[in-house]
Image 1 (cartoon, rainbow, N blue to C red):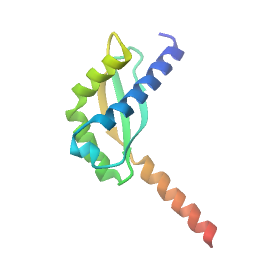
Image 2 (cartoon, one colour):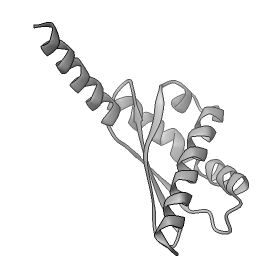
Image 3 (cartoon, rainbow, N blue to C red):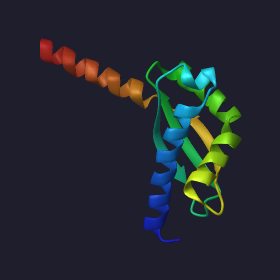
Length: 115
């Protein structure tokens, strides 16, 4: 598979996962401001690693990942229906603290500006 097609498919999957997250009714997922940071798809489209981050911190992101793992079948089915993929990759969700980290850097830079 050419790399541009894999990149396009990866971005499509990221966009659709973000849309499906807004439709989930699990309180672990709806209870926090969740963002899809990065999506990595293997070359044969068998696995898809989704990195999510929460504004509330790493604990909220880990709790949301538990909810996403329990809804992985629903998310996979929705991705397959929306993108018309022959083989929908298996979803692996991982928590990351990138939003919290960038907010901390922004706070530090704002504090330097005030001094």
